Image (cartoon, rainbow, N blue to C red):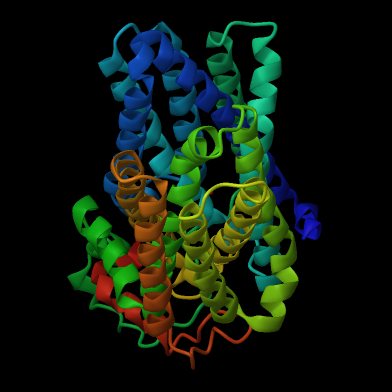
Length: 453
């Protein structure tokens, strides 16, 4: 897995991702403290609304940006979005109204919605070998998990010597460092398409396309965004991937929303045990990311992802059953074990997702496909986050876990039915032949000329 870091281009991009993620983690802590300063007892409501704004920005803006990704140089787009995020973060500590926080979060996440899919679409072009790309996906998963564990510790250390407003400065510095690393990296041209088309279109007559075939076929932003979503919905493997995203979002929402209630109220444990519980979830995710490269070589994408998806409702369902019993000495280690399994299963589903997208569309369609998948997967979280919180507040965490178990089971079952067992790419995680699902990219029509943690 670490061998992919020998590629100098990917090494610089990975470093850019790590420093940007570290800054993002600092901003998460600082935003919580800012919300408390502005809203006091209503800080949770402020953070909840900010999270909804974040998800809404991802859902609405990512497909539009993906459709526009080939209209500017890839490197210029990534650098501009990093600098935009750095500027927005610097403005956060000087706001004095809650609505200003919402506006800045919208701007920040709009830039992230532009950056992330374009960044994701660059990696398979930098690492065309399937094994290298799988290692890069596992490294990216580890980076996200380490950020969730290390950034709060780093923030706590910094808060002993500086006010929390300085955490925003650290975030901005991370984005600037990311921009510098990307700016000094030579990125591959997004236009070449090494994969053969199933049915190449004949060249137009010389006088029928005076501006060139690319200009004649370039769609508008809205049409490009819709075509990216149609790309995802047209390929059976990508529809299955969306169902898998729903299963992960359902189980993950229980972890991220209900942990504090389970630890503090249900089990009556101290506040310091909340990060321990979340750490178990992150540890499971990291362990799976380390094991996945070899596992995928042996079993293939479909077998690993679908089986892991069925572990998610199993784990959350055990939680719902356990909550129906009186708490005892077994409750705390049982919760840690359930979170460990949930984190591992979620990572086993999410990490190979880039391989599935890469093997389902042409190279030029990668930004549109990654942007559409980015948007649709966050729509799943936009559904499950408030559902988990509302059920836990009104009916209790047991009811929340039970309902979201059903949602996760529906997602896993749907993925198993949508993803063909005879899928030629399912055997060893290799891209599908051009004559199969790649042909589904024709639903995008003109978007074939368009070129994504």
